[in-house]
Length: 465
Image 1 (cartoon, rainbow, N blue to C red):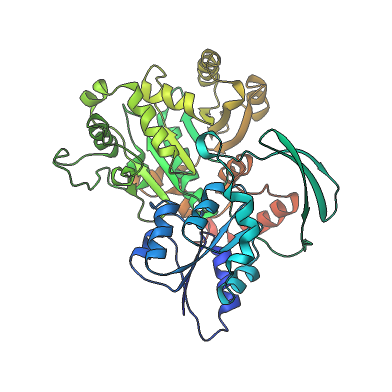
Image 2 (image 1 turned 90 degrees about the vertical axis):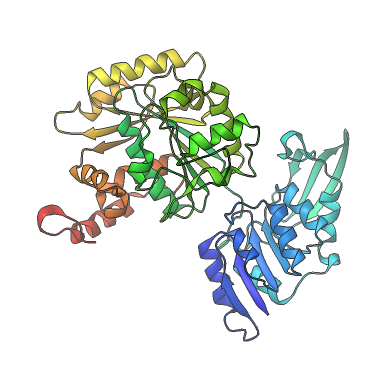
């Protein structure tokens, strides 16, 4: 029997594989993206929404079931759409969060019958989704008790019904995994003076996020006057697209503009307009608009449409903008972002300009959305306490010291975050912690990490590779 383990969570995949390796009847392969199932057939596949790829869940289920593959679906109780798809495709093997590797492995060897999931079917089959397919009509009014037998008073069709739910004991110390995807985030990066600051920050954060989280990440270069993300990321700005309307070399935004003009731009073909990063497999890059004449013709609503379509496909979107807030390519991302990362150097002039812009934007954007990153800190910069006093009321994510190596990396079209594993990356790690992508580092972790870093240093202050 051939088995594909494709949960989108590397550690869980490897743990399931480890448990099943002793079974001589299984040929096991870990699969990292959805489209691979179009190339190879399997008898059984363990999948979840966390698995990256351009196919949606409906397409994935259809492809697998059309090949007579038994599907084991790992999900969470809020995934009403996904669970209903399981019913449509006669998928009986469903596991809810928190997922234990042993349970997934057991389902491979001992599949469910319909009677095993009949209670799940009864719970979800009569549900109707709320607006935007993002919830259920079952509203919990009161939850009583704190034991394994819980009585819930719920409201269905405006009638209160008492249900008794018997839950199995949970073993707290066991390692469990959650399939639920993190809340989607759209970050607009803005600076008033030096646009290279935002491009540099996006580059380093994008590279580190791709290594730390199992997410689909998009980098959008909306600095329409001076696009540079392709150079920072070391990629060619032109995309490969076959179209009678796109003649010659085009960037992502040029091709997107043409597609919107012809009313054929959608989530189903979005992948054609972006570049897959050759190293960071979960990062797509939408290269900028190197055409000032076309920029003059591009309506603001086109930038809004690009963000809206991208938001339906990616978990995290990082948008580079221009200092000129009168540009639609800057103003639209600032208004649609879940959080705005403002980057500034620590001098009175830039900080005054930044506060001036933020104060004018607060009529349309709530203050809490603005987060501050201080970059290129030197001995001549304002000290941290002064900066904090000037920016009182705003969250400062980190202070990034000036580093000549970042300049060298840019000139060589290499990602700075790739070259160093020492404390030079600490400010970027701090940003990811404060944005809730990774757990916050404890005091003792910092102490031990500092000692490890000291051992890594050699003469000249360069870290060992």
